[in-house]
Image (cartoon, rainbow, N blue to C red; front, top):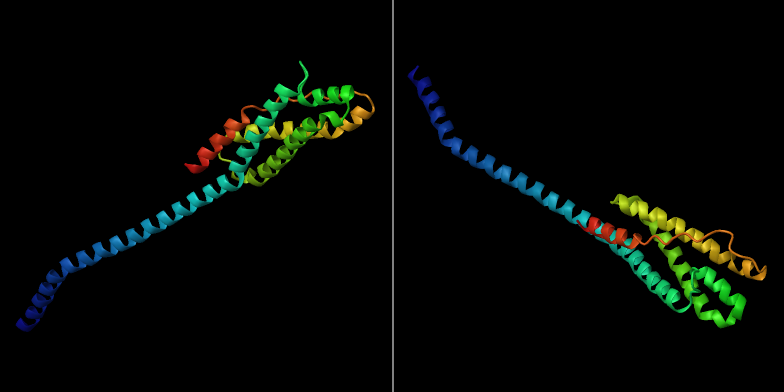
Length: 192
């Protein structure tokens, strides 16, 4: 019986000397698992940041550049070519009725550029629509879309109106001036 007691004591002593090693192994294992989780978290965060930056570079920055270009063209047209009290398209119609199409070629080219920029912006908006982060951007995009489509339709019908000596049947929509700000806010939201 003494022999069995010695074995039990030896096992107990062995277990007591193993306890610090078990605690150390558990701690190391926890650190390894925690470190792995942190690395996965960082990797996931970096991937989200890269995806957001890609959206900014592929969609939002080109929209902002085209909007800035349009705003510059619009200011030029309003200061150099607009008839008092009339919008750009109405002014162009008045001018070509008065002095002919060739004498107003520069104005036509600028309007063509406005319409082309609007169409490019609309294409970018469609591609970006599933990634919108701010409600203001969604709202202002819809207003811009409505404006751009009507503006393009009015521009495309202008030659027919000119040849029939008519007037525009639809009034011009007010340009959504808040859209540029909404684009900048959407860029900030994507980057944060």
